[in-house]
Image 1 (cartoon, rainbow, N blue to C red):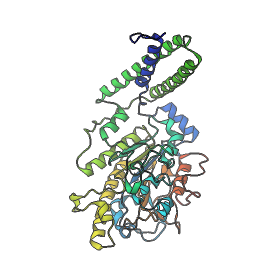
Image 2 (image 1 turned 120 degrees about the vertical axis):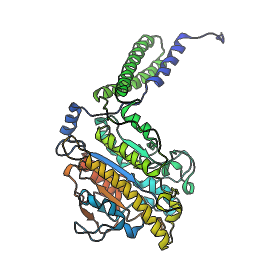
Image 3 (image 1 turned 180 degrees about the vertical axis):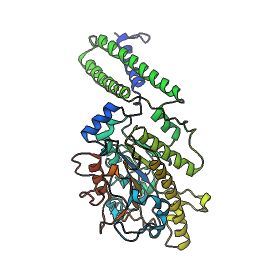
Image 4 (image 1 turned 180 degrees about the horizontal axis):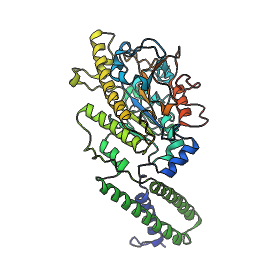
Length: 461
């Protein structure tokens, strides 16, 4: 007998409603301050903490299109070295960072894949893995170092990691020489096939960290969301139990899978309740500034706020994607950055590249200044208790060179890292060797490899 078109099976409708609730309750976790109990637990476990027990942060900042290598390169090694011209804006922080030469990403070179160096520069920077050359959905790369860290220490904070960008957000489509745009517009990768899409809007970053509204309104909204989620979950669990006896075996299995998801949401809410919402005492940003300097500095501010409130201990910031061709009229550079990077060793173009490099370093100086001025829970600065990689996936843009990369390691990880030195390993080594050493410092155990790593980079600690 056929079922009339206007007949509604109550059990079917009930199950559909439960699935609908799944979309309602599967809200993102709330972000904020690590309480004393969880803080003590992380210190005891030795995960992402300094010798004083303060949180240890790991960050990555990307610069595009290579650099003027001559102006970047320091002279001398060890502590008796001279900063290159490009690094002069951060000269006052000489004892808070180390310059590391001769790092490379071998998987950035074209080899049999040919063109696409800008896509590979972005893709390899945190992964050290070779991207499959495709513009389709069959992208494949590798997990990035920040996500290795987040998988180990992400349970200690409201956000496992934070991904920021001042570039476009693209996870599909055809970009550099037949590579998917996913490679060129994402630094962080959760798995071989899944990038962690960065957030370009500082206001939305702020709301992820602290909720919507201002001050007490944010706290009230936070409490309301918790209460609403709790009430919805209570209803779902009670209703599902009464429904279970009316279902066949296959539907019972489906319902069990659904409830497993609900339990995961419960865990997220319980986690949110362990981390009370902080009041940062600052107004939320109004959106993306039109001025590039203001935009980048605002994103640096968001990273600092996230670290300061211990909303996360892992962050990455793509200031601009490799291949970016914007001009810098405010410093007298009207040509596009990518166009200039193919300088053919012409002095006038190299001079303009040096201007852009210096401009980015001035923004990094702003970040370091604020990090050093911001006191951490142990009385030291955020900068002292952090390790921040600043660099890019290309050195000489003209050659699309993936060796001798421009790399700074700022911060002392609470005293575990050296600073005030130029480290030159003598011959090219995988940049991922640096990452393995950083993971050791963070307390991530038994990480044998990242991408093309061959071992640890000695000398940074």
